Length: 410
Image 1 (cartoon, rainbow, N blue to C red):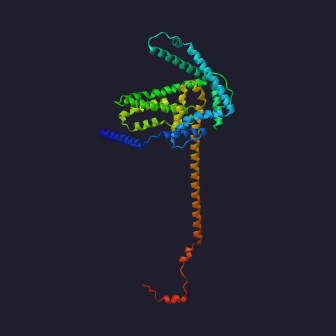
Image 2: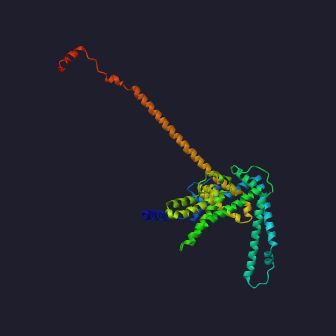
Image 3: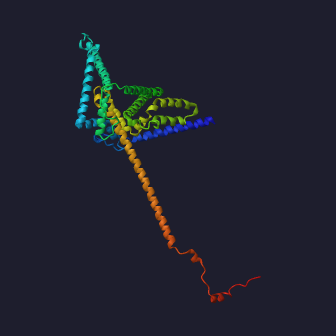
């Protein structure tokens, strides 16, 4: 009996896998890649909507992606259009950028790599000289990146002031209160940064066992593992983009599990009991590692295209200097995406409630009309007692009808 049940479960799993392959193949056969002209038109439409801070339609996925990608730059443009905000932004960005580049270059010149590059030995191998130059640029990149991080840590209040200006200028309620910025070390922010780094480490470490098993698949295993790792990184880049704003952490206690955990739960539910314990235990480990990020993950799944585009725009943070210029606008951009989604959902909910109220009102009016018609029918109808009462009989009719009566039998 147990063998029969396990065989039925395996047949069901094979049928589900076959139907999934057929569905994916059908979708792939209908897919037509967009032409370059269509992509250019979508990019122009996305940039135009981003300049107006207007969400694209839900069906326009390329526009939604381009909207999220263009949104930080649209915020920077809106900030530069306002004279007061422009003066503040240029003063802060110029001071931070000059300090970062100056200290980074100074540290690089004092390093041993600079001595090796500027005073090369007469080495016959040209590749050695190229390696020395590459080492110098690596030291310069590392020095500027480190100084940039220290500058942000000390002058974070000034970035918050620029972000507040950008939010007000684009019709968004700022998250921070108005205050005079100061140069200080924000230990609360430093703890948050360390906590975020630990979260990211746990997130990517939790998928390593699964990717390791996938890589064992003969032939396609390494490629499939690399593809899944890329998708995992793209997903969590969008989550971290949503986490840059306080709106991404709303309803943190009631946030549902991410889509990959829900899928794992469904797969675990149909597995036989003898092997169910392994994915069940692994799912618990992944759930515990990612539980603190359920809220921004739910925001990403609600608006995946916009936040994925925004996460691509955030890759500028790997370019020292440019990150200083664009950092104040990433959190405001994420807030724009999430607030616009909340407003659209609220408007749809109000429209649905209004339609329901109108439907109930129409039903009540119909019932009242039916009751009025029924009342009129009862008033105008003749009395049924009067219709069934016998007509009066006179004496002559009684006498004429008497012979017709049969004699009473005794």
